Amino acid sequence: RQTDWLGGCNGARLRFSPQKEWPANVALDKTLLVLKPIKDAFGEGLSWADLIVLAGNTAVESAGGRAMKFCGGRTDATDGKGSEHLAPRLSGATMDSVALKNEMEIMGVSLREWTALMGAHSLGQMHKTRSGYEGAWTSDPTKLSNEYFRELLLEEWEEHSVQDTQLVQYKAKGKELYMLKPDLALRLDPELSAIAQEYASDNDLFLSEFAAAWTRMMNADRFDGPTGNVCDRAVEKPTDAAPVVLLM
Image (cartoon, rainbow, N blue to C red; front, side, top):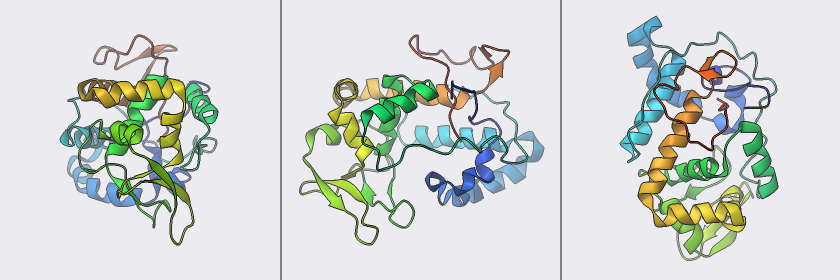
């Protein structure tokens, strides 16, 4: 994040407390177990931080995303120190666009980047046993596409209380599609909605801008001196983008 330069992929501190206990990281240990044979095979020649980023890139590309340049060279932290003040401030219950934009400012993420990255909700689904919410955002949760934005803007959304957890989310009228309050904020906020409409009407635009935003966040803490980034030669940053650090 640009306020204190804490956070980021470098170090792979999500393997340690307190990050591994954060609600957003529930069941992350299962993913790390899938990656462990690869890490074991390469040993010290491959850091967990590089492996996690590369696995993320590969997953996005395999789901239909644009090919992305990988900038390696990350190192691993030996503990979770430095994460004490990085607990997520947003949740599935956050619908206030002011709070969302404040978080964007702290992270140095532009409105377009934030909106593009929200399009990752076209992948996967919510699990009641993990987050307390349920259901998929799109009809094909294995494909990265602009369907998320089309469903968000075109469907009629009704308040839905999750059985057992009683958490409130939204369900498309007559369909098994679900959204969270931060998703609806994209539809209700004029600035964010305008960007969402661009992506809803142009899948190529969405995929291109998602890849750019994702790559910038993956490389954000690859510092080279007080202002530089070692990955700048490999990745062209958007002209309107500010420095950003992704919390991991």
